[in-house]
Length: 107
Image 1 (cartoon, rainbow, N blue to C red):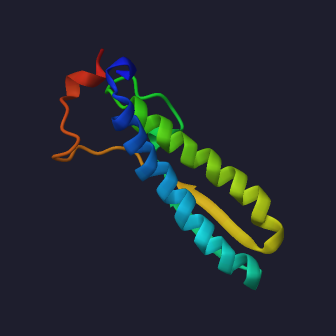
Image 2: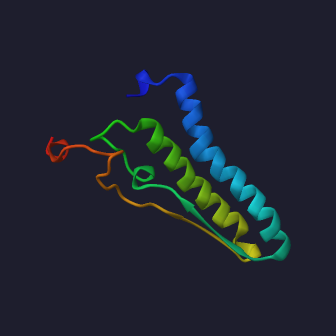
């Protein structure tokens, strides 16, 4: 839950998820803008489009939501330069990192 995050954990998550996309996109866009073409595909998450609710992913959802909107803004700004920018928002799957029971979904 949000009140359990430390400031350093919050900042680390945003640095990795949001700043990483920003820095990579910025450098790629320098080249693409000069050549007047290019494509960027960012990886967001279904949790960037909706609230998690069933699991505690406040910071993750916030960071992926930031990527979704950063992608939208870049797509609009760079469309006149023949640069296409999209985000993929995959759903979730049970893995060793995301191992929760089916009862989590029943309320």
